[in-house]
Image 1 (tube, helix red, strand yellow):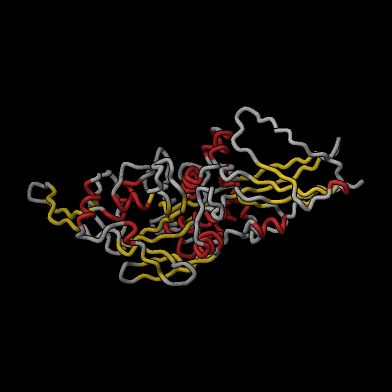
Image 2: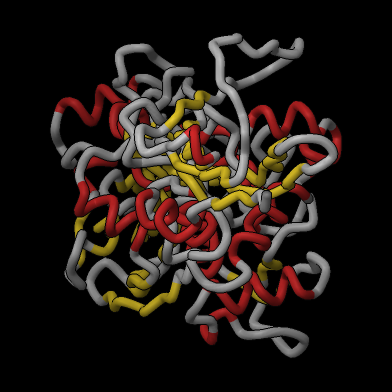
Length: 419
């Protein structure tokens, strides 16, 4: 008898909201069942519990679908990856009687539709915006004169599966300890941090090289990019050589693409008049009137910080290389709620992001003895009109109040006292 396996790629991918990536490759989300059908098999099924190897990280469950017909040799299995399964590519081996075996593969992603997944996002409109939407806007300019820049995230474009998986596989942590790295991919905190480091090229085989001196002759001027897709394709097709050149909005746009591909809800955020505190004093010794900075927010739980969920939700991740974090040019995830309340003792990089939106700006002048004297402190200058694209529309969504108390309120002083 002919024996074959049907992975139901189209039906499964539609059910798992991955059909825009592919309908011919099985791509599923963890914590949610998918079905496969074995035809021409004379298998018998018992209740024997499978043996687990030492070091097994996640157990998948399997049950026989009610539509199966064991008498005719047609068996449909419902297979469920656990809600904490590592994301990535899996090999699927199906024994259909010796010596015949079928080897297939599938890709497992995070699941913002699954309540037990750390990236679970309750609102369907937000899931459509922050996971499924392939286009958006990135805001540039000043707090008083800003404009939306169209950006094609293209997280479901051709090659994106191979590109994003490659990005994880060439990260330095994977090279040092592949087993530990793959196991840690169950955690969106870890994956987000790896992506933040890999979007820039300064410690690794990352995607983008930055340039701020205006000399782009051997590359592409950052203002010419309008899509993550061409950047990621260039990086992948060149054998992971850094693409020239990016600035903050380009780094953030590319990171948003990769985060959305993996299923971590993500949005691009612009901070007008952004500070850069280099000495952890939470004061900025100079500023530029027309600067802005762009990062991303990723949605995830933070049980590593608190079990009551107070730090769950939006987390700042910044792929633009500014300062090293644990030896790498990456930033975050830093809980927006911790930034708002000034809890600068928490992981990751909360003091740095806090200073970008909430630090004092100090102006200095030199007296006759060449000693710098502070002559003005401006507490309202840094962090104006922190903004992102609104859900389901082209309007702007002002997030400033999620990052900082309104100036002059007592709570703002309290947040500063937590330094």
